[in-house]
Structures are given as C-alpha cells and as structure tokens.
View 1 (cartoon, one colour):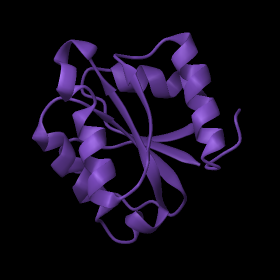
View 2 (tube, rainbow, N blue to C red):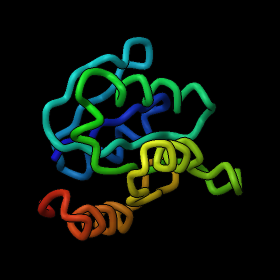
View 3 (cartoon, one colour):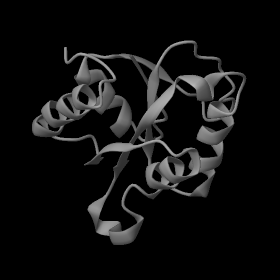
View 4 (cartoon, rainbow, N blue to C red):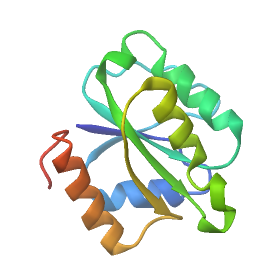
Length: 126
C-alpha cells in the first residue's frame, strides 16, 4: 500500500516519513502522475485549491481504481474547517475518511493511524 500525499509546510511529509509506509509526494504544480497500486491520500487543510489538485491526480488515467481512502491533516483551531479537504474528497469519491491528525501528528497518532489502516484492510501494520 502506498501513501500519496501533498505537503506544503512539511507537516504531512513529517507524518508520512514516521509511518514507515512507502510513499509518493504529489507535486503542487503538476499532480498528474499515474499510480498502479492501492493507495490512500493524505491531504493537508489549506484552501479549495488542495481539493482541486488532489482531484486532478485521482482523476488522472486509472488512479481512481486504486484509491482506498483519505486521511486529513489540519489544525483544530479552525473548528469546522479541520481537515476539510480530506472530508470533501472523501464525499466526492465516496471513499472512507480513515483518519485525521493535527499538524504533523503525535507518536500516538502514528500508532493509531497504522491500526486504522490495518482495520480497513488496506495494509499490514509495519
């Protein structure tokens, strides 16, 4: 299983590196990359452009066939906007919102993330 992610400030990148899963970082300027294996997307929360960029990636070639779900990163200071990009994408593509975490996540977030991914049957916990 692959983690596909977008990281503008480095928080998501930090989280992904700590999971130990294989990963692919999307380019903000050119998200059109083809993935031919099961993946989840980790989306930061910044603005509506994030949803559009990640949607461009998912809609590219056969990527949608391998999409398993979404994870959101954000700040709890933004109340209803917390992880809104991942929530919007989850609704748009009718895939589960697997997990959310604040900023680059805590060590407990990493543990719980791996448990959630395993429960969804997406991958074995490393």
